[in-house]
Image (cartoon, rainbow, N blue to C red; front, side, top):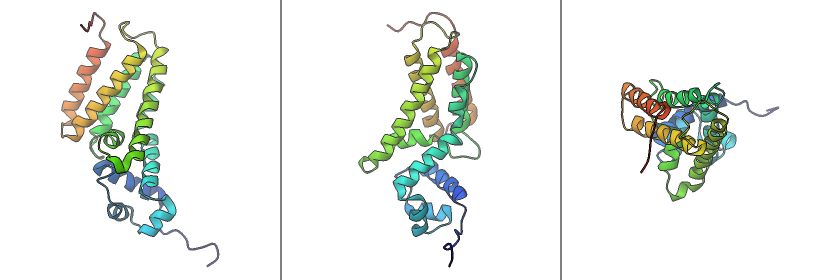
Length: 199
């Protein structure tokens, strides 16, 4: 057949379905059978278009960062340091406790729930998180409206730790209302002026 056989599926839609499966079940909890069923393709088509499971996950991770996880990069463009942090923590709640998406965070799940056989996938997720934290640190270094007690590197690490905790709590079944309350308490603690001494 001239030009080859036309592709019988929408690759972008198939990638979105793979994202949902990985997000819901984690890398190691997702089988090729789960993926092909959700994506509506067979194994040869999966390999031909997306590569093996590890390569497919890399594509899914990029799509996650450009789609559901894009709030994090967008937050860095906020005009003040306080607003950056507010958007990040509130965005983490919205992402991890969404009504139409799996609970938890794809990156957090991939860092904490991958064994030795998935070392490369875990390292990719760790690299993504380190890059995000470094970008936040650089943005906070430019801010002049945050409590003076914070070093930008420590504050960036703290914000990421809070976001991770929200994701874990969401995956464990905390309700969206509970997570929003936790997020607002965290923001109040982070952004309120006054002495905060660690002995």
